Length: 351
Image (cartoon, rainbow, N blue to C red; front, side):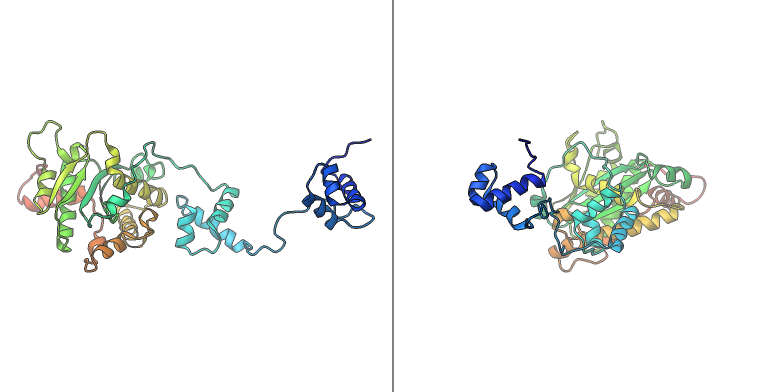
């Protein structure tokens, strides 16, 4: 006797024939299958033929949703336009009706998904503690090298764009302020923090038990063996209610909030935009930072924007707080030096 495959129509026909003669359960025992399977083939079988005993597609006969070519092309074009944005962000930004899973499937089929350059250190999740702080209780300040971004490096050389980003970020709300220079420098860091704190003071932000936190880089503390406070520290602490604190050596996770902002701006700005010249760069940086502070919802902070969080904590918060535009620190520093030292040839001293 020829042994039939369980996937063959002839085998299923024998199951049906046996069931009609002896019953469903005896047929299930005889052919080592289940009564449910026997009933399925009995229901599908067309009498006196093998019709109906082939495998059938398990896909829905009448799917509730159908992805149109227009929808497919839209998500493909959006991914090409914003290669670093994920499915969740693009779906909500453009109010797409298809699911995130479907968006990722389309991108995968088109070869548009890429592996991100991940940081190898895990950041501590302290969101519950930080959420209880008042706005600007801790401002984390750091610098970011821009010369190691492959998409941005050719533009630095072509248009003489800045090589270093100076960043200050309020830990509670996530609001950020940025500026640019060609190098890390104590004089630029001092000017940067002076601009920020004066801006917040003008916006009626009152510091109380607040801190400006940095790492131990020479652009913040000066010489490693200095006996006196740096100009950066003195500038911070000239404002009532705020002090300058530094993280323990090597404790980079203490600056996770500003490091996260650096990761985001690299993905969403430097890897995406093209710049014609320095003014074009500054205009686009200004637009990005406004979007980041006012319109970009942060999934890490309950899908709220930085400005929404500030408003929740203080309904009377000055609307000018998120509007501080980026500047070129080196140009501003030398301009201020020349204005303060009139007459003759003079090289201003670094603070």
